[in-house]
Length: 563
Ligand SMILES: [Zn+2]
Image (cartoon, rainbow, N blue to C red; front, top):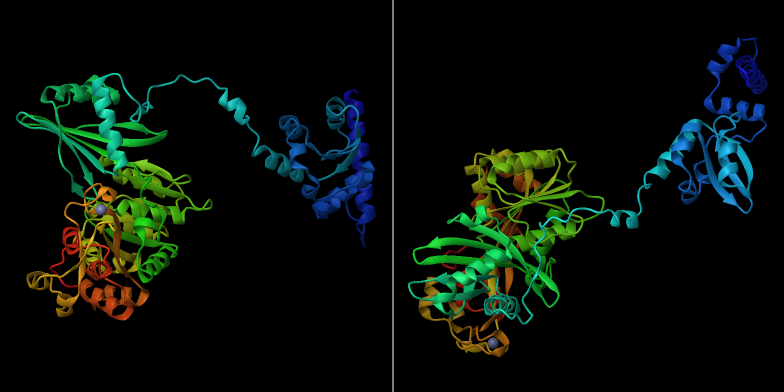
């Protein structure tokens, strides 16, 4: 078709459309073609185009599209020529076109669906674009194609050290046995220490260091070298004499357990601590396993978690199980529609669907949180509030509408509020953002197979721990000194978390921001009005139930103060 004919052809089409438009637009007075087009709605124009082309017109075709069928087409061609094969039925293909006088779609369909009859409909080009866009969202290489992509394997991933295998090499067997036994007895750490003429290792179980296991002194350097090789540390790393850190994985009957290694120099050699990041025996759910709180406390915690924005702070010393509780909360908050970001040092327990980030250096804290804030977050867990800067960042995140979980080092829940004040946070900001202040401790539980019953608390202890007089007549349980096979001869078996919570209701927050009550008065008021238990009350409840003993309680919390 030469140019003149082409122009003539387009004029004919234009006239056809204008005639149709004039026919279906009732007018009282004659108007120009330009005004006619200008006044017509998109749907009316579409109708005129359809009539002129003698094709059915549809202003809305999205419900007609079979997306899996659309995805089978070349979306690049569809997008360029403004058409889309919508679906097929028997021998027929339904194709939506924006320009019924363009033969591109006919040629494409003749090539791709040779045995099919073409049924064309006219639609708006915006409709065609919308369907192509929807189809292209999931267009991409298949999983199999991606799996087949060849990449250079870097040695960033450390191979698992099989600790339950029999090793030929005696040092490998020694370390494997040391680690597998630690996993078996649920140790949290393994310590290896060298002294003047001895080398030994021991386990920390439920917060206590256990008995020493001696190894021949001459092997100390061999053990050290074996562990460094296992972690594939670079020569620069190895030459660091102070604070050597590493990581490896232990394979325990097919299960991979991460182990964090830390070594520092001592007068006689070195001290190695290996932290077992084995969460299998800890129940990571609120209300289960270690995290069985009393129902009122759990209710208040879940209520605070249901508030869309604000801070929930958990305090407690190192090893009080704060991260287990926070991870359980994250698991509960973890929903596909929410973006959860964490900044931890280190990442201990990865939850699918949560974006975990590790803090490599404290100078990264502020820029990381600033970047989080620009990353469209719903929930942020920032490892720890330790200074003015981190306190301000947590408050800022909550004020701008985010849910923030964090931890802090204070002995009790009410001191969390004081700590924020000391860090320079204004009272109104604290009152407005902190939704719950919690304190947590882990308390050892008596082995039920060997615990001793019917012992009485001495008068000295009654006085020391300010216990009410009736405790003198109240028989309690006690640990059996030798223990039994059930508890690996320790007398205790497992731990439970105690949690005290101060929910900051709007009324309490108001009084706090006006300076009408001190954090301590606030605590007393909450306890009086709600009956929520303090750490000490929680502990005494456990004691009266025979689940722990006074010795374990006084180790976990300061029993000499009343609150
Ligand atoms: Zn026992």
